Length: 331
Ligand code: NAD
Image (tube, rainbow, N blue to C red; front, side, top):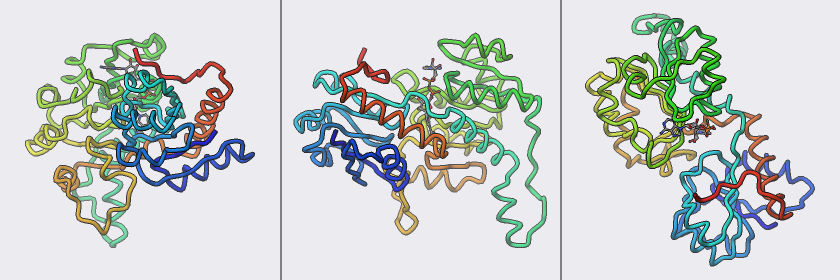
């Protein structure tokens, strides 16, 4: 099949060329992100391969359909960037990589927690400048703390297992609680209970109309003063403006994010020589208790290998007309 890749980076090309080493499929790698302007690049291809900040909205899908695209192969788990209804209407199938090393994202959430808490990023810089002082580097023990987990799917469960190992009490909120997690010692409760009792809150639910701005002014006000909030799910689960207010009034004590509401204009690019026009990210960067990484939770060798091989399987399944195991259907 002829597949047009959008938002391609060097590592995508490396891992996808490796799984397609026999050259069965013809892969073309575009650096541009998919949107209604760049959709014309897909002309002459059978499928498009997209990542998290490619936008397959209704208008773009109509253009993809006019270009005879039959498959959207997502090289991600989340699919909030695809209008499934529009794709279904145009008979374009959508497939994703439902699970690729959930531990990769869970471990990154832990990295954010440990860095924010023990301030290793600040210590690293201090020591390099010959400053061996411990002033203002005080952290707290994770052992015995209450950690709230919103969404206990694959990543949330991996996260719970690690935090249980730290000796934390885990409160979880999910519409579909996991018996396995209950048996492991996770306590399910209401969202309000989780918000009010947790010292650390980590988000692992997908972005949907229901979870859009789930963490807003009201939710933030129910949290313990000085709470640590970690988001490795999707940026828009948090109302960023409300989070900034909560940081300013010190309700939010630590904020670690791997995802950001307006990330498509920023993340995955080197903008170090550019003026950042986004005032909210500039404000966030300015807080001493905020740690931002640019959507790198998934970024391990194991995950990249799995993303490439499962995406290839999805493309093969579609080509062979076999059942598309990882299809996401409009419901
Ligand atoms: P999953 O589908 O296995 O689990 C999601 C869980 O969230 C499910 O248990 C579901 O019941 C629950 N959920 C859904 N709506 C909810 C709600 N309103 N309130 C509480 N819980 C709710 O997904 P996963 O593989 O664990 O991934 C979770 C999310 O992580 C993805 O949707 C994606 O947005 C994000 N993600 C981020 C990265 C990264 O690099 N930072 C990588 C992969 C995935």
